[in-house]
Length: 326
Image 1 (tube, rainbow, N blue to C red):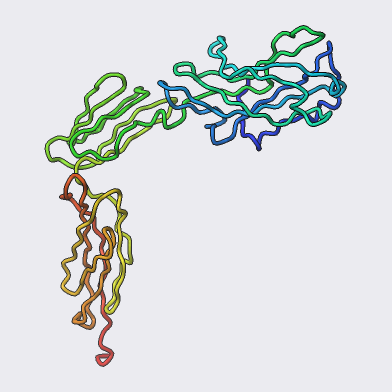
Image 2 (tube, rainbow, N blue to C red; image 1 turned 90 degrees about the horizontal axis):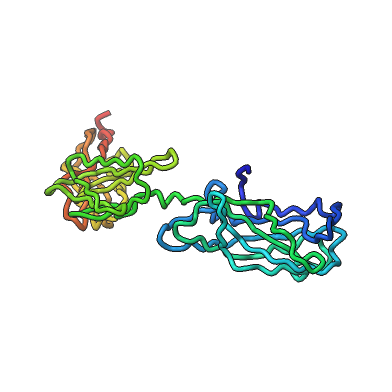
């Protein structure tokens, strides 16, 4: 069975062929379609996340009737199932289907709502709507919806779960450990705690950036972790500051508490306007014709302390020549 995209409202439940269809063996139902809103899909599959609790997913369905059977009394029932390697498991309550699901003698029903519940350890498979109808007082053999939708673990299931920053040590959850790699760079160590949990510990007072990665379905999932107090980011602002100007420079806060700013040029003053923003101004005694590169530094203050490293931005200072000297 080919995989299809199942974006409801982009997906149309089509009934254009029903008007020409003729009931066979007194059947009333000609077709059943299902669909899911795009927010619950990943690459056309229903995305699930958790192996320990159930996932509840809203789902839509519609029924088609044969054109010459719209006046007949419809008595049918259906249930959503998930097919896992050929074994079927019910994932919804039983649904009663009747003429009340249609508007007048239309061949296509209203778009109807249901919820499927995907149980832990029984989530990856193919979802279908299985149905039967009464024909001359006897229930027919079960049939299946034209559409079927695969389930898959969403990207966040494969993401390594845990904080982005460590002061001393933290625990991380890895649901899929294929190709697991750890680059501690002499800054931190990792130890398995079992059940997909790993403890990452800071080495002494070392600070910096490490990565923890795994692979799943041919893709790599990497967690970047800041160890200790460490400054990252880029200072933004004009690279030129002229005499008489006052310009603003900033760096992303990145969850830090504050930044320490510095600039050693004697003709520059720093005014702090927020934790991550400053205003640079030139002093009035900057000599005419002065031109020099200076550097603005920012150092992070975090919950783990004050960083020992800094980020910087080079700024060209300049003052026009005294026009009387031209």
